Length: 486
Image 1: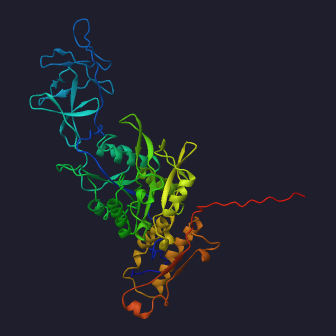
Image 2 (image 1 turned 90 degrees about the vertical axis):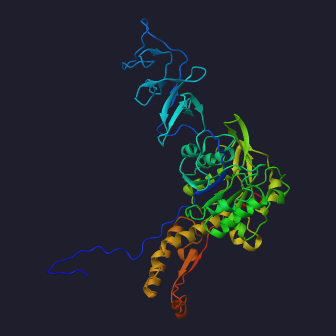
């Protein structure tokens, strides 16, 4: 207690007993995919791009031309003689390599195409030729090499497509599925994702990687902010089972699964190798695959949709809210679907929890918003309900940590009720909860009835919360009748 020694008015800051609950992030994805060891990396930040003219020019006296800055437009050898190689960087200034004494040393390949010695982020010597990387051998000859991609083994936070390229390479055969997925994620509204690279199998004969991604998924467990999990292109029963189990066990994330592309629309078990269940309420599956432009082949290519769908989840959360179903949404960057699905065909897929991607006059849309929950778990039939419930649980959990080890009395009960009630009131105002008034939309009960003596003796404080989550209008029905005019 402070001491007051003289008469007067004293104003002191009193910290609040509890802070308002802030909603947790809902659209941070975790991707797992294969990236080959020999993927060529794009130029990294801080390095240079160079242009290599094919002709060297001297002035009429045989001396090197000077540019506007008075610098030679050519390289000089150790005796200051011009060398028939002209190298400029992107600012138009001469670029050259240096020896240990700092003297310019030209480097050319077998076709007299110049290289320029620079250093990478780790300070290692590197040569840049049209954006690719080479190292110098001991005899001074250039030797093409490939930069190592990010190590396999730990998830890496990625916040932009450009950042993904610096760690895992651009669109190439060795990383095509993962690259398209992450590109689609950011292009459709995603902002943050964690990427776990899996190296190709080195066994002989080669074994397809990610037959069972359980070990890789386990590495996502410490990353608490992940709320969406996708393994683009994973379509086997073992893969789907492992992804669903991971999300159900964690309880704070959902899986976006790719349906089996080669199956016909009438084959439910073929498209969805894992049946509906309570655990599968943490997963949503999408079919068919989509067509996008592939820079490698310079033609349309068919890819799994899970990365693009994850981006739609993020875009929907930002513009409408996690309580709104991520359906009737346009897939940006999709040229077409791999196979057209009619309404009659979707009639057999939608009740089975298979979300169909359809083309409406050339516009590619997600036309389904269900989980793979079975009929016994119909409360979580819709992916928006599951994701919003996860959001509520995680937000309340994080926002009520202040209560741990507090005296378990009426004062604590009132603080919990006030904190949770204020949070749910804001959710009701945002349109996430159904009810004309807050009393009809939610309730929070924490009193002597929920906390009798025997409960308090166990060191527990129990709060009962009820919420009426809005459900999507999946079937919009208009009944029209004809009436006789007067």
